[in-house]
Length: 84
View 1 (cartoon, rainbow, N blue to C red):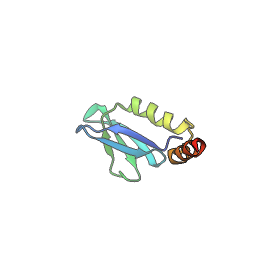
View 2 (view 1 turned 90 degrees about the vertical axis):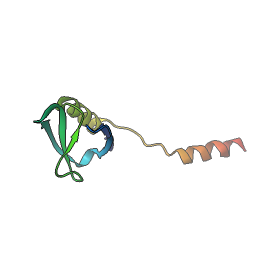
View 3 (view 1 turned 60 degrees about the horizontal axis):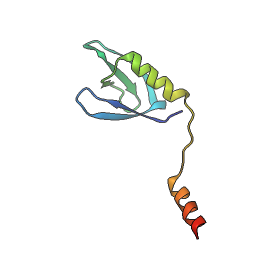
């Protein structure tokens, strides 16, 4: 799972959501091109600048995608260490 997802806000800003804390989403009835997302942190709902179909695809992709975290600091130390 990809733990974080970035989304655009209607006001022009951005938000970062924890994928696992999303409880649901629905189309904004005032603007069909926006989605209201409910999370543990945004229990009242957060409007994002994305149709619900696109949000669903993003959410599902984050849920089912496996990835490996790489600790850059350790890799840099390993490279420096191998040069000596």
